[in-house]
Length: 417
Image 1: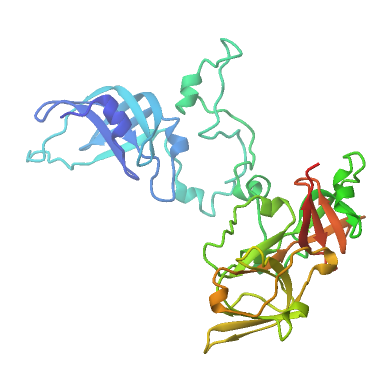
Image 2 (image 1 turned 180 degrees about the horizontal axis):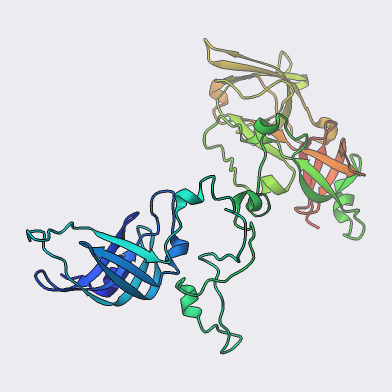
């Protein structure tokens, strides 16, 4: 099936450095040249698109005979394999002598030259092109066009040509707007790394609005305050990235949770569901310390704040401050020692009905590590930790407890009025 002129224009892709011609006719008779598709890439490094868009004539040397081709139309075709130029030309009758003719054998190649001709890139990049990159004329680009509003201010006369990248290119003064080195930091964004500069930022914090109160002020008074009475200020909190260091599969941690980025919180990071035993000593009811043994290795350190949650609702839960933890490779058990009622002075209300229990009684108990964000206030460009305070978050109306290290350790309540 013969290819139509429109199919040739839209679908016949010339490879790098290639020109494809559209001709009609048959072997043994004259052919008529009607169009050509030209790839602007001479090779992998040289693009002559700026020359092709101005082509008016082309000279073809066919088996030693020079023929001149007059260009009547041009268009940039954005094909599947890449972009190329399509040129419509005045019909030109040509005769290609079959290769079997002994008097004038065909070379099966056509030599082509364009007017205006592409610059010699080898000379342009040589030491003898002294004025190369020195601006003497206005510049154009393939994606900025003159807008013709001669018929009205609303719709340009050449709207279709602009959409098809066929309009007359606009001219403007030389600039570096499209230079990556110039635009990256302003428009694309730039990021430095510790590997580049060898230091980490002292604080990476997120702002939020809230009010600070003393620890001994009741939650009822804080919640009942009107908006006008609250001294709302902007504070900062540094998110605790250890929240995502979770060895327990399917523990419900979602790194895309927006609340993790906008509000300070004591976050429950589940570290174990395999409790082996729990021991409060000889008299559990008056115990001040606890020893918990779990199967496997725990991702915790001394000083961490834990929450032990019992499966039995009547047993409740209790906060524990880790004082020591050891892991035995032979038994694959971790032993955690800690102090009980770790947040009692901050108003902790959770209680645990203490009894020394073994593995069979603890099948659904859970152990959490508290990932605590740190809260800061700014005073005259200096940053200070907020310590031993109640903190009202104006965004979600939580009342948070901040300990003596500036860490959010407890959600005391959520105001509903």
